[in-house]
Length: 71
Length: 257
Image (cartoon, rainbow over all chains, first blue to last red; front, side):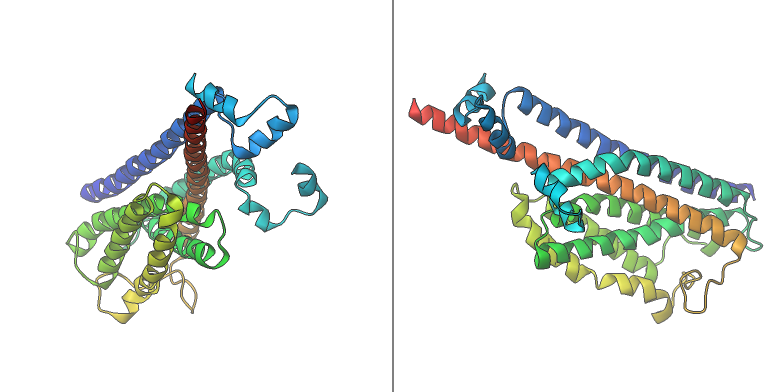
């Protein structure tokens, strides 16, 4: 009887650990990619679709974005 | 862009636009996460309130996680197979993002169904493992997940591995009906289907309802994780594209100088 409870506890314990690991891995990946994206945006790199919007504002060209990225 | 979006009714094809997909995921993920936590908690509570099996005693409680994990292992692969059709037939831009994001999640659920099944098998069958049809076919599914994880991450340009991964996924789909019917076609220690069968479930309602609640809860959990992983994958590709653009622009700037 008590041995059976141990098997049940082991199954639930391993499952909880592995699922928590999966969730943490997905969250860590998300955090790292968001940080990379924020760093690129802070450096002035624009996506092509964003560049179109900023060009209408007259403030942004491809050349300046490259210099911004190097700076 | 927003004007054209407002001018016509929303359609499912709108999800082909990654920006719109991210907006949708941002809105859905918190709700899905909360809902899955709630339903899994309710399911586990019901599972431990359910009566013990007259033959299996307490070990029957392993069923409430083992069965949902096994269902999800097959459901995840089916989603990947449908997504692969999306890559090959409709050239849906998010289809291969879906395949790549789902593979590790499916691998984890398959591994957990093998582990929990093994822990259940030891006290009930007297062995951790047998190489019979059901167990072996699920083990093959696990290996296929590992192969697809490697394949979807093998090349720097994801567009180039997308087609190969889609073809392999579709060829491997033949394993899914084999897993499902393995308990009917071959001699096996594993019990036959007791929930999804033509003559209705043969499992008592006091155990069926906790099981279904757990299954819905873990399915919601899968949906949450898959959406999050897809969102991150889109972000990863954007970062790569922006780095390429910046490098190209820097190159052009240097030759001009």
